[in-house]
Image 1 (cartoon, protein in one colour):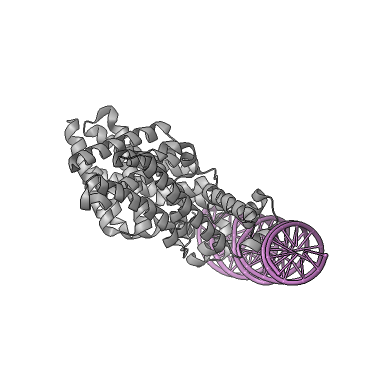
Image 2 (tube, chains in turn cyan, purple, blue, green):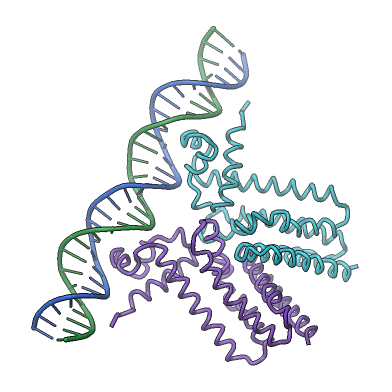
Length: 191
Length: 191
DNA sequence: CCTAAACTAGGTCAATCGTCCTATTTCTGT
DNA sequence: ACAGAAATAGGACGATTGACCTAGTTTAGG
């Protein structure tokens, strides 16, 4: 049986460092140092930098899917579920104001690096997008659901981007409220 | 008299490469090679990488200010001026779908690098923000003007972020229309 | 002109990067 | 208990980076 402890630790630390420092400017030594292992040990688990990036993306995909499943269990009404998504902006406010949205900034960096893993990173967006689409369908928005899902995603990306630039907590709260208002109006018009 | 040709060429090429590849992963050699000069020549004009970054930011500030001035001359009505801002998303669509928003991605990268020039990069946002605020004031939105300006900025950032991730032209067009609709409703409510 | 400053080319340097290797220790199944 | 696999440590490599230096060339002002 494989003991997954070290490998998992590497992935979790890399996940954090890729978010906080960016993928490109996070070195093997940074991750190994933060985990407290040698570079050789690191290399035993991940041969190339793309290997660790793939593992981090898979980790984020799994964690995101689990979070969305949890929201689906905790709240029955689509409105409450979507509201919970919008309010990640508040729940993760401090980190977002310091490092931006983990998904958006990764996609942006990979695009500039012309990195082959862009589709994999986009899959994290897809997880949110399709989950939101299902909620809007359940709320009776029919064929407009995907369009509305992208709109909510767009808002959260925009808020995260400006939250990073201005570090303005009041702005985040205000736009979260505005997004929920938009949601209520949209759902009311759909029924 | 100083011949500004080479220095200006360096700044323009660096501006493009910083946008397309990111600041950190653009090397001196990349810029020097693209301009067609030696690294020594490059070093003569810019001693450190932060020097060239400062010059690029100053260049972008000047170019942005000039663009906003042009919009103020071309269109009399605030509504038309703001609409022109929203439609940069279409005018620069191809580049945005490939590299994202130049301002947002720079701010995001500098945040991850914990770079001291974050306030300077944010000034480019401020240029748009205060220009938009002036337009909303002129449209009679009074004290809500800054809040509305940030909302428009937020939308453009969100659209740029998802445009980069999905490269979906129809999405961009749709959200531009939605933003203009929002603008018209907001201006109608203000008068 | 002619001299001093500005410009340009190309080389060097230490540091750091991703990658790879070998030797040793620890664990696991039989 | 023991053989083989997994895990770990630490070093070495070639390449690249930002930074810096020196030596020629061009340019501009007196």
